[in-house]
Image (cartoon, rainbow, N blue to C red):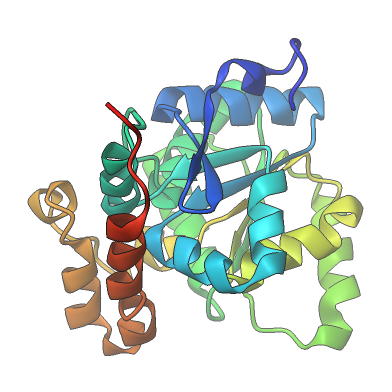
Length: 253
């Protein structure tokens, strides 16, 4: 549990379908991440979506990583819906894409440097370039793709450590990114580490986000599937998630 001097201490944490999730707003999440980065307080940030809940129900290692994370944001409308069924109030969706974009926007003022690790060759660099053009002065201190062999991992870790970011954003997909952070976190030298999935594809402009109305209605998964049929494996976890939510015991009124 976070101590009273830790900004995470005031954020309520709830049990939801076998994992934890924090009742946090986007602004509170950003403030917490920046404070942790400036103060050198280690914080693994999980952006929890429906597919991760399902995977965690079958993967004890992933479930343990989630439970031990410093901050767990609700990153899908499905998670918000399941929480409402359980009588848990989560203020809003706090997605990985928005976290990274907002941190970049604020970094010129906050002084918190970001490192982008993941996606196909060239994508993280394109995302960084677009953000720098959009917000001159934003602090992106390094980037590299997520295509490297296990024997190259120590060199990747060393490159991150030498860049000395306040926040390391890892976009390798679930659960690889969470397990990679858990394995190497102690050697990376970054106070805050976030698994951000396909965020770099979106921020680079290679993948378009669903229209706002689809996001509000919880239909972003349809947009993703139409644009990228390879997402079918992730989409196929949704029926299992719905079943888990419907079969979970609801609190007594």
